[in-house]
Each structure stands twice: as C-alpha cells, then as structure tokens.
Amino acid sequence: MEVYCANCGQDRRVAIVERRETYPVRGEPITVDAKVAVCQTCHQDISVASLDDDNLETAFNQYRQLHGFLTAKEIVHLRERYDLSQRRLAGLLGWGAITIQRYENGGIQDVAHDQILRSLSDPNAVKYYLLQPSCRLTPGQRAQLEAALQARPTVAPWERVKAELTRAMNRGGIEQGFRSFDVEWLEQVVLWFAVHVPGELYKTKLAKLLWLADFWHFRRERVSLTGLAYARVPHGPMPDHYLALLDVMETDGVVTLNEDDFDPKKAAIIPREPSDDAEFSAVEMDTLRTILRHFGAKRAVDLSEESHQETTWVRRADGDIIPYTEADTLRMLDGLLVPDAQNPFA
Ligand SMILES: [Zn+2]
Image (cartoon, rainbow, N blue to C red; front, side, top):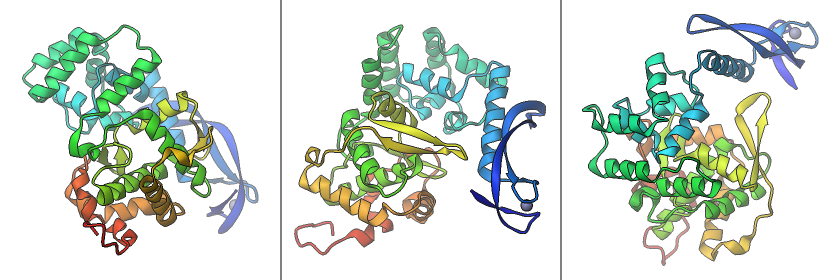
C-alpha cells in the first residue's frame, strides 16, 4: 500500500510494523503494541489516521482492563439482559440520552458511572434505580422493565437472546414503518446486499443501504422493508441495535465480519450463504434492485454526507429515532421516483 510521506514529499510504499508505544489516557501512560506505518524509501514513520485511531482504541481498551472498567461489549450485554435500549438505560439512570451510546462506541466512562453500570448486574440495583426521582422512564417503559426483571433467566440460551432482541426491537408503529421485525428476515435482506453490492460491503455502508431501502420501500408501499427502527448517530442514520444484530448474524453463521487491519470500523460483511431471490416479493425485489442500482457503488462516507443534507437529519439530535413519516422528505430518494399513475405518493 502507498501513503503520502511528508518527508519524501510523495506517495511511498509503506510497511506496517508493530512497536511498543505509550499513549496518555486520562493522564496515565498506557503502553500498547501499536501498528506504525514506515516509509520504505526514507524509513521515517508516517502518520496514518486510521492506524492512529486503532492504536488509541487499543490503549483505551487496555486502560479499561487495567482499571477493571466494563468494556463496550459488556455494557451491551448488561443492557440486553434487561431488554433496555441505550436511551432507556440512560433514562433509568437519569443520564444524558446519548451517554450509553458514547460508552458503547469507545468513550471511557468515569469511575462513578462504571460502578453504577457494574452494579446493574444485580437486578435489585435495577429496581433501586427505578425508584429514584432521577429515573426518566415513562410508565409504559417502567412496566416493560419490571416485566423483564421478572422474566430474566440466569443464563440466556442463544435462541432466547435472539428472541429478547427481537422483542426489544418490536416497539411497533411508525418507528418501524408498520412492519414487525424478524431477525431471520433481516438476515435475508443483508445476505442479498452482501452478495450483490460490488466490491467490499462495509458495515457502515450496509447501515446506509438498509436505511435507504427501508425508507424507499415505505415511501412506495407505506410499510418498511425490514421493520428496523433508525436512530440519528454522528455518521448518519443507524439501525437500532445494529452492532448486536451484526453479532447475531455472525453467530447464526449467515455472514462473517472481516475486520480491516487499517481501520476496525471498516469491518466488511462477507456472505456465508447464497442469497435466494425467491425469498422476496416482486415489490421487495424491486426495492432492493433500485437501491443497489442507485447507491450500491457509492462509498459509505459519501452516503453519510448526503444523508447529512436531509432536513430530517438537520432537525434531529443524536440518539433520536427517525420516524418513517420522514421518508417523503428525503431528497436522496427523489431521484428514484418513476412517473407512475398507480403510485399516489409519487
Ligand atoms: Zn519517505
């Protein structure tokens, strides 16, 4: 691979070497096996943003381990034991709406927050926070959490984890585009994209394609394609529980996530089963093909940028669910419209 070398003043071949490097994390020196790019011509180090991010993330994880902090994955598992979304967990604890999302995306929690999160492995702690005045859950959300506390098994078997995730995602109504969510159905849609998108399908791009397919399908049919709900996150609209869903699909053996050495956020989705067009109705097939034709070859970063121009994006805060009613306002979808007398929404 070639990277611009500031020392040579041009693109050069680089080698990636492992080296012990120390990073300050919260004022503490943390030494990790860092990956460093070295120019093969002048043998100077070259700074590569994705490698730097990767090394910093490694240092952050090491810091978490050193201090016995919960890792991002452990926070996800904790939440899922009680069927709580990121926002509901934040609401239960009276924290800012996107606090949990930040921790799950790599931001390190402070000691106080870590202790509180850790305490939640005991259901009695959850009951305690339900009684605090800081708890912001609605009566309906409280009732659901209380039911989850009653039903919570000591060890969740795999099928049960899937069923619980499905239940957490089926809040119904316009947030899901009036379609109930089903993991196996989503797996068929993801497989179809993974098989048909030209080149590598990174998970960030898949998130955008799913969003466009769902909102396009809703615009035409008044029902979404997958039943996923989408939240606004900094990089664009993101399926709710996206990382947990990717985990499920990988454990089910439907896809493999192939992490890029240069950028862990760039995990490519590799299909492990053939995709079957017979799974889809003619209209669903048309939605998939239309989205593939218009957006399949675009880069995730460009799709992100385009989505940031949309009014629905500008008007919302991070963590907000983007309701399907906004499908009609999306300019990204305007170019897909075909004059069709039978479509009252065209
Ligand atoms: Zn050089």
